[in-house]
Length: 320
Ligand SMILES: NC(=O)c1ccc[n+]([C@@H]2O[C@H](COP(=O)([O-])OP(=O)(O)OC[C@H]3O[C@@H](n4cnc5c(N)ncnc54)[C@H](O)[C@@H]3O)[C@@H](O)[C@H]2O)c1
Image (cartoon, rainbow, N blue to C red; front, top):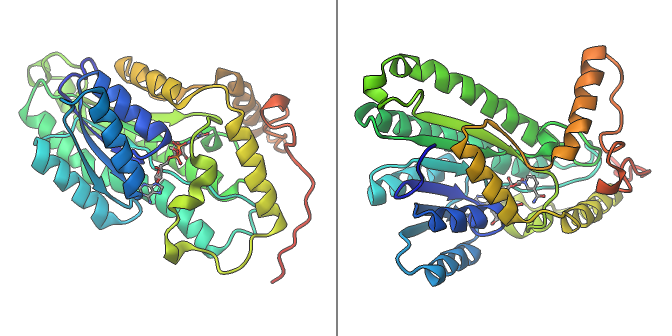
């Protein structure tokens, strides 16, 4: 994406963390913003922060639960009604929940997969056709989709099962989106007249950060009443929660760093956005294990400081 100024960005999970920083970064580049979050008060706070920095920022916001198809459809319609076009979509809203994988409840799975996977599915489903239609009628149009996955989409650390599954799905979805966007734009790319010389008008990236201090370790604050567990958390869930809290709060990079790297990657049309290069050695280790057919090693064994108590010992306390 060559130019951000006056372009329209829709951002989910804009009330906190990365989503808020995408909004601040976008506004600083002169973008128009459509912000969404399931939590209204933090969302309004982001809007107020933007206005405080620059009263002229064009920003609208809408409460939206990304796990609900109709709510993302309504968000897309809202964006088009306000700005006529959407250039950039950040499918970013996400939540975490941990514990031994068999101890996660049906509601844990439904909530995490609902937000992290269905949220991205709905975002891609609702916005991509609008972007392709805009590209068809405007040779100057540029579009970009950024899906927030995680290093948990490339590794499978213990006690993070539902989250790992959701983020692996986001990586697979995004890699397929990358291929499908090429397939769908092949004709246009061969005809520079149609694209004003741009090889491809709509591109995408998958963002894979490691631990960064944001609200992610307090995801439960955004958990709807009908997704709450009736039973108390198991020992492994409590341990996972404290490990996540520790890892996230000791992250050295800031959410603003992640936003800066993301915009830079969009400018360079770089699909994989890896923000913590040292962890790539663990990804390589996983790929080596897969290629050799050997059993998976501890994903954090190469980076002991990332999570000192990786592969902890915990007894399953859940009864049937
Ligand atoms: N912080 C990290 O260490 C880290 C690392 C890798 C990936 N991620 C991913 O980054 C993304 C952003 O998370 P963050 O770290 O900024 O956390 P965060 O908790 O600060 O922000 C997430 C935002 O998503 C919103 N949200 C939750 N459920 C929602 C729903 N159903 N619909 C709409 N909005 C919803 C929350 O209200 C919150 O404002 C997530 O997808 C997360 O999984 C975070």
